[in-house]
Amino acid sequence: MADDAKAKGNAAFSAGDFIAAVSHFSDAIALAPTNHVLYSNRSAAYASLQRYAEALSDAKKTVELKPDWSKGYSRLGAAHLGLGHFDDAVSAYKKGLEIDPNNEALKSGLADAQSEARSRAVPSPNNLFGDAFSGPEMWSKLTSDPTTRPYLQQPDFVKMMQEIQRNPNNLNLYLKDQRVMQALGVLLNVKFRAPTPEDAEMQESSTPERKAEPPKEEEKKAREPGSESMELSVEEREKKERKSQALKEKEAGNAAYKKKDFDTAIQHYTKAIELDDEDISFIMNRAATYLEMGQYEECIKDCDKAVERGRELRSDYKMIAKALTRKGTALVKLAKSSKDYEPAIESFQKALTEHRNPETLKKLNDVEKAKKELEQQEYFDPKLADEEREKGNEFFKQQKYPEAVKHYTESLKRNPNDPKAYSNRAACYTKLGALPEGLKDAEKCIELDPTFSKGYTRKGAIQFFTKEYEKALETYQEGLKHDPQNQELLDGVRRCVEQINKASRGDLSPEELKERQAKGMQDPEIQNILSDPVMRQVLIDFQENPKAAQEHTKNPMVMTKIQKLVSAGIVQIR
Image (tube, rainbow, N blue to C red; front, side, top):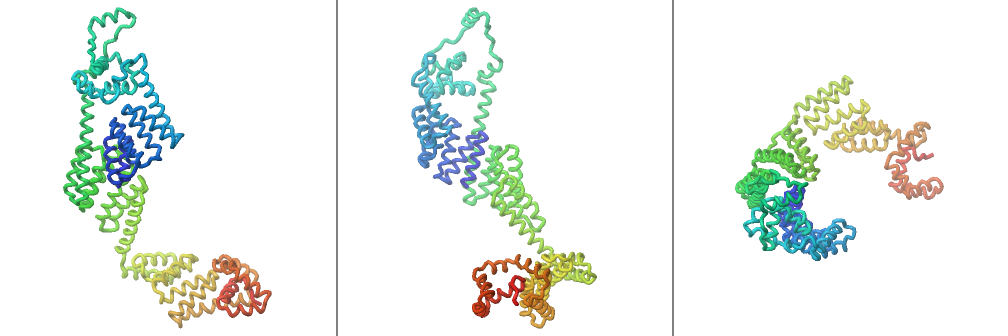
């Protein structure tokens, strides 16, 4: 939750919406009050709003929580600089550089603070009024005087005064602006005489080559009380007020949501949306409430609206992903058939293209699994499965194995728990030479019904065909435990023993021996036997120490391993 609020704050800060950023960071701090990064971020947001006192408080908290973090001192220095505490700013930046000597932001901040401190300590001859612009008292004086109060609604005037306050030497740049002169008079408690037409005539006669140009129409309008500039300022102020009120509605909605008072939460979130349509988190919260209430259609509508509006506003991609994930969750709740899961899967996939969130990925995997299981349930029909298996049997008798495989596969879709269909398809795969697929089906057949002898005969036949005689023998013997009189299994045992004894007697041709040895060396079990130091010593004893070899023959485990080596053609007994 704190990370989500932090992400929203970062997005708002990047978009220049510092009021919203402060609100989001405050939400995050309420959830994680010991996280120094959150205080640092909120300090930056306050500083961007020129609320330096709050910025200073958060910067001090940052340094308190994390005294070895250089960025905290950067925030502290910036806040002091904004308040005109230049010596404190210099001290803060120096402390930060002690921790991180190569930090460019701290170096730049220190240079600015030292420059400001010098300019305040030794006013230049061109600016004798530096003290008049220092500190917050300047703004209070301008606000209290009726002649300068309207100027504070004009952005260009405020910007000029901020630049003069930052560096009093800039006063020389704006002395021609009568508003600045009027403000200077208020700050110095001196009344400057307003310019008269005679002054203008004198100026014109003294410098005939530079005629004074009449003020531009735009500048006149900007200075009039009813100007467009002032109207924009009022609009911006109203917009900020609406955003602030919307955030309060959101907080009220969150409180109601936590109390499970969903109807009240919906009302507050709706009001927040009406006040500020540039924050999709309000829509998202309402969608979450609808989801809790079981009003899934309304939730989906809000999620679609959040995605559409978020793309228009270029909102954080994580927010878009969250909306798509929430929509997918609602669609899953509405699903009644396997096809109903498809829109939910699509929504989750789109969310993952926006932001690969582990929670969304898990939801996608879960819904795909649920869809597959439901498809099997919908398709399950034992009667039709038997019909398809019989069709496969007819094609098998006609030696049309690919067609038989097709029908056995359809039979298994209708009834995936039929061992006979797996057994029959394994026989088809064997005929087609698809031995790995056949082995897999035979093993599945045995898994479904360990007493079904056909599964063992299919598996043993494939292992015999691949010349894995030891494994085939084990398979046939396992089958005989369940059906001791089964002739196919007995024949399989006989054939395997013949091949194994053939190797023991040394009756293999050079080509057969070479082939069997190569195959044996690929067997992990054979590799383990040969890499075993004990078995290597046993093999040496069989060659060089008859007495020790005789002792080894009494060990059943050793003899079993020897027999495997003999069957693989690795060892020959003469």
